[in-house]
Image (cartoon, rainbow, N blue to C red; front, top):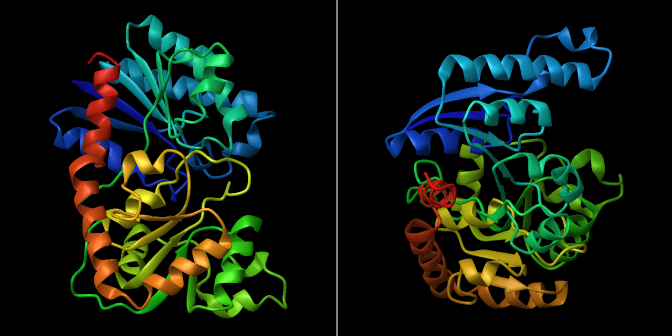
Length: 328
């Protein structure tokens, strides 16, 4: 099957831009990648457009040209934010199924609903938000979390444990609260753009190992060097559902992970056997105190998580499920 994958190439922190096309190719499909990232079209060109609407129209023209040249059997957009409803209608009118994989639920649900109904199939990373889509009359929504890309997310046996507790990700208020409490009692290493967001007096500054964004291979190295990988969803205090990519990426590296509870997680990884979950900061600190000195228990749980990831949660599993739902 010929598949045109539209990606936001200007946002370098979206690894799915790489994982999805390469996985589809490995499955035997013919794939062409189209960059719909408007920030990277031509330096300085953005200034020539009087509005975002005009810019989207420009991108629609480029996208439609790519579709007409390639003549795909399927149009798959990662996020799909730079495609107008008119463009999707034109793709569908050509007899090409239009599919979108939206990965920013639940925290950008309202933005998602602006175009969700326009696609033939719309996939979200949160099962807990599906009911809200249905309430809006969006019946084409389906749950599909991200996963593990084994060529990248892997165990590196040559690396020794260097960090007691590591956190990799961007700053937000809920994360600062959790990490600030953890740092009071445990050795914490932070990787991400935190320094400018913290107050000058913040004790967390001394926990920052790498300030700024990091590439995927760097993150894999951190996971492999950590006794505990701490996962804190940015929507910690707002939603009890929705899962981030870090859940799978850390597990796919054979890391021991402690993550804040979300309703989807126990259906993906068995609690206390493949992943450790916490619901309060006090519970998190209790579990850190218990597991940090118990290497054998950590290793067993990490091994189980890695096994589960490779058996159930790779991008190949996700792409097969997506195509099956689409009847392809």
